[in-house]
Amino acid sequence: MRLDYLSIFPDYLAPLGLSLPGKAAARGLIDVRVHDLRDWAHDKHRTVDDTPYGGGAGMVMKPEVFGEALDDLRIDGATVVVPTPAGRPFSQPLARELATRERLVFLCGRYEGIDQRVLDHVATRAELVEVSLGDYVLNGGEVAALAITEAVVRLLPGFMSNADSLVTESHEAGLLESPVYTKPASWRGHDVPPVLLSGDHARIEAWRHSEAERRTTQRRPDLLAPVTLDVPGEAGGADDT
Ligand code: SAM
Image (cartoon, rainbow, N blue to C red; front, side, top):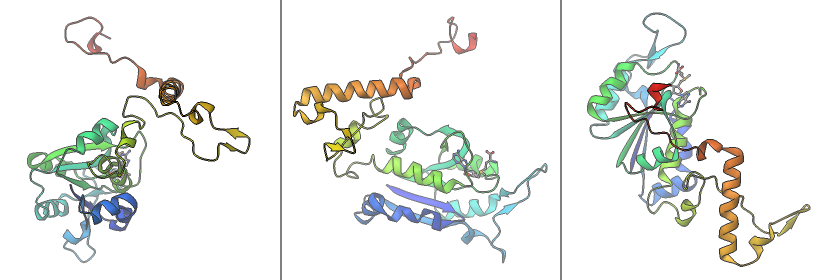
């Protein structure tokens, strides 16, 4: 998978060279290219922002620099991911969807965000996916791009040395994962649940499943809520309420 990042703080994305993503890049599984957006600015201050039309606080990222960068990066046919609080909430299903793409291009916003026409233009040339990391506001898109990248690339075949660990993880089976323990069996008065020391794999599996259900019920009951289908014309659909 090829991954491009456009940012005015390319150093923010340095962690992409560390840990498992760094190893995946070294093995050629991912091809990471971080670009300084200011390289496409032409004035001596390398300006990337300007005041908003209509007035208001803050600055807006200019369309021209993005336009030239996107042309040089040849984004046509790629999937362009734009982190924004106004985007689709990020989730494991969306990570799985993005993991099927050959190329992701991240546009990292700053200030009040990116001129809307950049996004309108991208949508004519590429698949545009606006993604929100959650209902809060970050200073810029870099942290969101890192989080999205990490969730996506760990799903790529060959990324994890033990792909089995993906199967039981939180949000994969619709449940949070059960608690995990390692040695020693007793630590500061806290004991590992005896079933995990029993060697009885069927009982261990049953315990893990019931713990996963218990945790999910207590902490995230919304994950267990039945899905309501909005069938047009039928009583009970979202339009009827
Ligand atoms: N004025 C924008 C708004 O109210 O929606 C927020 C701009 S924020 C200060 C600057 C940049 O941080 C955004 O363009 C976006 O790239 C990123 N960002 C902030 N919060 C985010 C979130 N919850 N999810 C994804 N990206 C976010």
